Length: 438
Image 1 (cartoon, rainbow, N blue to C red):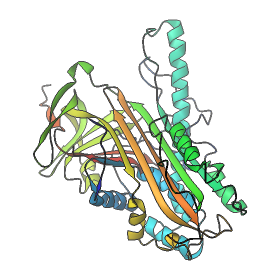
Image 2 (image 1 turned 135 degrees about the vertical axis):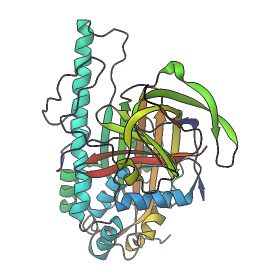
Image 3 (image 1 turned 90 degrees about the horizontal axis):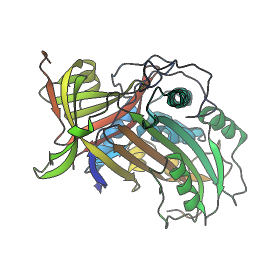
Image 4 (image 1 turned 180 degrees about the vertical axis):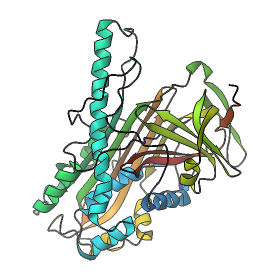
């Protein structure tokens, strides 16, 4: 069992639920289409995305559900994982697989074809582009209002971001290059960048990329002593998200309080409080509340059982709720073979076999998957949430083998689960998920 480190006792995740557009994007999380998101109705409101927001309902696919269940079974303490970042990295791997290696991957991913897997990832690309365009326009509008005196000079600038970055790396001294077919696929559908590394600079270069793409939230993916002796290829995804609560938690209500651990021990956390109309559900086994963020983004807090969560969210209703949730500053590392073990449990074996792995669509050089690493970071406060994930698939060459209304009350003062997700074209993308127990 793996112990996950919680940096500071803190809390609330937020979930993105916005319907998007399908198709390949030429850039992820950068200003894209010339779409006018419209003028905000008030200087403090963000411009709405030029797409219809989906509901707060959660419908994770089989891959996401299996991953969350597996991670929960092998992890002790608080943790967070990004199924979406893992999904993108696996897309880069699947694009280079062939033969039975590819068949095993497709089966484990729970899709009928590589195209179906790509479609799920690609729909999110367009959302990132539109989201970035909306955020840029909001910032420009705010600065114009500040010049006109519509907003106070002391008001902070709006800061929203949803960015996806993909990259593929190859060791310089390997004579074979990525095939033209592989390059075309991941450039057109994943907007992947290409980089070269040496055994000596691999760790520094990979960590620098992770640091830049996560705005400093994940400055180090690999330890300084990571073995790069026969490292041939690295496939990477970075996911960065920042947004504000639709209604900020009043700072003057924040105060320290007791949080009861699973063993009954009590520790102190900093709790945020608010009382508004929120989507809410409760039964004998579960209590949940959904906190909205700007641009159709939601965060679900769940006390008790998370079984049949989609059905329970479908039955949730908007009502007045007095919410108390702790702040969070959580960092999680899956760097001890957990994600490799998950894929093997799903039936993926050939990809990890130095002699039998077939990634000939990627590279005319015998390579195999040795390691999969993911690091995530989450920070929340009264204003909103900032979260990031980096996933790296480490591929080695085959050489050496190794009011009048009664308010409901939701108080997350005991272990709870959280989910950050967004829906695009009726498909849920699980961006981040986890559990707080200490």
